[in-house]
Image (cartoon, one colour):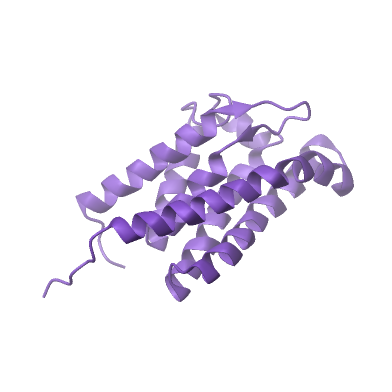
Length: 181
């Protein structure tokens, strides 16, 4: 594994900050899972950074929140958030960034790859999120799906489209990397 440069660490920090800003702006819902843009931040990190850096960015976000920095939805932080109804979704961000960034690294940043990768990434957030929500709340999987998936699908579709389009446009604007010999 290559050593991270100061530039690499700075890029990771920028995406951690983007994810934090996307997360804290939220709309609370009655059953405890708020609407926010956190997945957009995860998607952008996964699409625009190499897999290791993307994972590090999201891990930094999760650790900041775990240690009490108010980066989670509604300006919240601490272990109580992870132990609560949204903890599985936050943990799922780590799976999501891995799924998307590894697929992107393997197949390239192409429109035909990005959309399926983002949908698989969404599933990587939903699956642990729904399971944890059901455990914490005592709801069955059906009620958890009704509370945690169905109301969020239109917004999640919009986040997928925005992340795909932004990443494709930004990559076109960036200068081509030249290798150093």
